[in-house]
Length: 60
Image 1 (cartoon, rainbow, N blue to C red):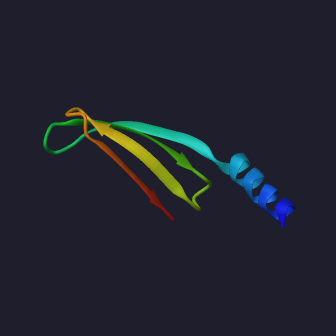
Image 2 (cartoon, rainbow, N blue to C red):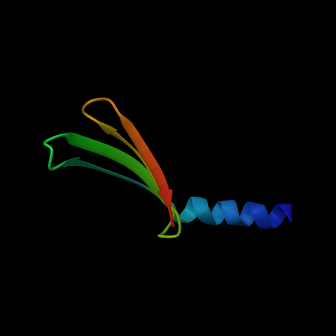
């Protein structure tokens, strides 16, 4: 069982990549985000607005 968990973690580390971006919303606010993608299986990220609010999420 431990070997299976190690193999899964290794596959996630091999297929994951860091993503990021900057955008301007329709309200004129500049937003930036950084996230991690695991080859399309799981995506997660965290973002910050110009007013200092943090947002985050995870998806499949």
